[in-house]
Image (tube, rainbow, N blue to C red; front, side, top):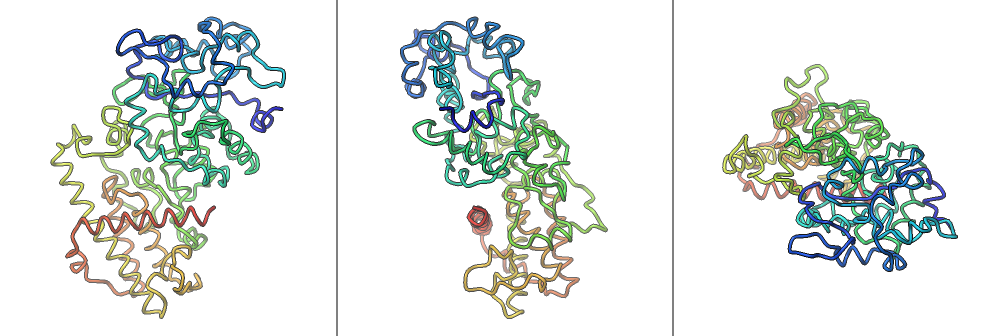
Length: 491
């Protein structure tokens, strides 16, 4: 019996995974065992993914796969033998069978009697990091220590189509990266697809991660989206973009979630690291009072859009030199192609020395953490003055049990603006590093609008007596708590 996946979406081309195309020097995959140190041989993890009957198959070579009747003819859908021939994979003798396993049985009888693919490693297990690890061991190791590699099966299973767009790497690889309008799929279709591919023992355990190799990389074709150094690394979207259509205030959830097909914001990291349709307008603030919708608004912060602004006096400068850096996120978060995605001071070269970068980062985060704690204290003092709890100023889902959850009609617009900007900055996670100018603009406007509403200020100097490291850690904990709370409430 065909799977629900194939029944619902048989027209969608299959995708397989690789990491950044570097160091592919050997034969790769299961075509033959290692013959010398440094040549690429199949790993045990890769061999374990192969269907039982395929383990007795022999290699047939890429020409067999590329026959007109198979993956090379004019009727072939999606990626074909011809597009593969132009890639670095082909140039380095990484063939179809390097990633899909030996194909003699499959070539002899591509379709089994029950209608399913016969004896070939295919989607979803062909997207496992174990496939890419055969050639890209160091990069795969980086990835496996990153936040992207965290397993979130339960959350993805319960998610709507819009949530799974970013929290389910498999779904992005299969749909968005192949031009499918993911947002038009029903939640039932998405749930069935997720359950079908993630149900053991069908799937490799790493396939429920938020992002895998195929979330960003196309293993079958050159994309023309070059790296900072000018290399063709087969990424689906450019590393840099100044477009803000999909993340501007009032953008719909469908716009940000469906970025690849619509190209409303074609930035490889910003597709997911954006504010989830943030709307800092006064109307937007009054419409959404339950939770801070922006959960990872790094791209919004970088480009200086999405905050609750003084609409009569917009920012003099929306973005800084970080937004203009070649590669944007990649410049700092992926030095030397590192796939840990952790920005360290030495990644700030050539603009800053490591020592200068570390000092600048500490200075910015020290100042912004003090500003945020002062803003939260000011809001808490106001809430207490109303006879409520210290956290009753917050979005309703963040108010602890036992504290008053006020009628939101009784929350002044100034407080709604300030709390929105507080979380806009907190949830970006950088504490001013991405875009200090916009961060300070939002903090200043928040305090100005509170003062206009008659809400007393606080003595920031007392907060500055708290060690900077303690302040920074406190804000990081707020971010961790609110993201957990938002996910729990949503699911």
